Length: 549
Image (cartoon, rainbow, N blue to C red):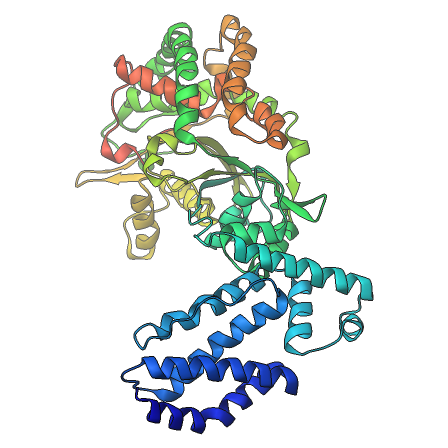
């Protein structure tokens, strides 16, 4: 721009520049100083620019940039303004540089410090006035102002690369214990991705809200709201020094843990397959031999009541399908589940929603590592009482071999009631029952073809305890090595957990002999040795599942 035009333009904008400075500083002396700096930089930029499409926006952006630098000088006199180059091509990026950095650094201050900074530098209030407004002693306000200035200076001295851009996500969130009346699980409380990152940030070491905010490059205000929410619901707890620590059993380094434990699991699974499975198979064959003799597998189970003589049913007398369920049931040691939970009750947290459980999750630090082999394995028992007189107990073992939805729903109870009615012949293919019928088929509980409808899961006309008495018990020789198994699993796992979680890690690895992962390795072994045959497609929805009537 020619000098004559630049002189004319700067003259036209002198009053506007001074008005801008006065609204920002609120004092005549500071406004004159700021206006002089803005005028100087605007004039330099005008002389260097060839064409300006929007002169108002151009001058406003330069004024804002100079003001942000002026504010930094006021906070720290030792920090001289950097050289400014306002070429027409890059004025938009220059405006956002220092101003955005300052705004970001202020956002990492605590609520109290942000308010004091605002009142002191933007509202121009004296320290004693601020003390009255925020209801704090004068000395405390002075300390907060001093500390905030130091934090801002340190923030500007740091190399401003993104601190932590990794997105932490929890997977396989589980509750070991009792859910509240509404059956609200972890996934409800961790619906935001930010909540996952906050919880992980304070897992290995306790941290302040400011430390977490700087690590995640998120304003403290957002962090503090989420921390309060997590503390209120028992997923974080307060630590000394105004710090917070996550109270969730987080399992990271899945691949490394798997490499350490697979060898141990395979060793003990092989012992079980050698010493127990042959005895189990023999006892199971003996149980069903007489019972299945007179059962016509070409008929649907729904056309008759279960005979008193029939203690156990498998669709079309499929012994392989029955063996899948009985291996996982028997090797889970129905009586041993209470033992596995001994000592863990002190870690169960009473939740605001009425639940009391230990929250656990896998950390999806590398999505490529998350495969079927890391799917949660767990047992679920449900007691369903309906029509005031009938009771159904269900057992399910969830693993990588099934394709069931592992999340509990209240509709699960209703569908088992409908299944019971189907078994005793109360639901037929009539228009009034079509929704119930289709739902049972969709769930895989009924398999239908042109000839017949077949109940597609194992059914036992006895209790869980009675079933265990029918099956061969674990050999004493195997039970005797249980403690060695537990210790080996604990030693292999503990280094992956922070100190405050290592005792819980020890308890989590109790009863490894009958754990879900051990049973998965047993199945792997039996498949490799062709004792178990692969499942058919329609069996994956109901495998490792028993309905106890």
